[in-house]
Image 1 (cartoon, rainbow, N blue to C red):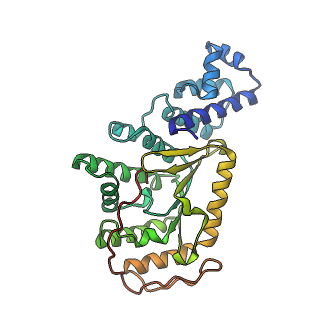
Image 2 (cartoon, one colour):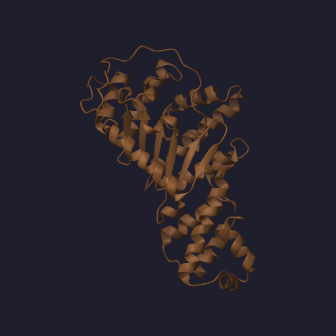
Image 3 (spheres, rainbow, N blue to C red):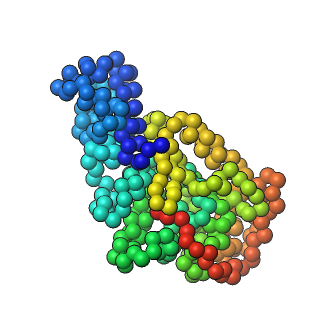
Length: 320
């Protein structure tokens, strides 16, 4: 486990080393062709130092890599892993910490994301009012200008769902996320309606784990699995904590979390019945879900908007 930028450098280095091996070149030969010292190639491949997008381009040219998608991905990763960077989030570098910036860079480059949330709506599916309420709960005492900027960042991230070739997003939500009155009844009602609209996008899959499903493998906390085009060697699991994030890069970690996510999807309500439940809670529908998780009772769905319940405290912190 390493912080985000180091994970990117190490993964990028591993991929470049693999491409060099495929080309049949030694590190000394590659360095010689570029007029570099061999130690520079070694530092790049071990993640000990960053590499600029321009240097990645030169390496890929030497290695004979013609895959345009792979070249673009590795060049973009170089920009976020210590060799510069021009993503929109860099305009907020004085406000958001490096780990959050790296999380956003991963999100912007990923082909797909699978996420479990147990406390709050994922950041990519939040409304502005909900995002404001979550931020106020988790970062007490923020000046209004900083609060506004953090909400701007949250909403700007959502562009990955609305661009050509959008991020494929699969979400499993604990029912508690829908029941927790973040920001009050009005904010929650609008948030639930926004979830209904977002879940109807062809590249978004949303499933709910009802209370009646009992204990499940994800009870220990939320996580995100980012997957990238062209190569799975760059995939990463992100575990979010109150003040930091952990990045898991080992193949066995990726396989374990991927397996856990598949298990939760199998035991959750179907996407259709999940939307029924959200609509009922939002006061927009009266359909009760009819297909329940294996071995579980169907949850009782209210036929009208539920009565507000007192807020139970702070929700999870950024980068939700």
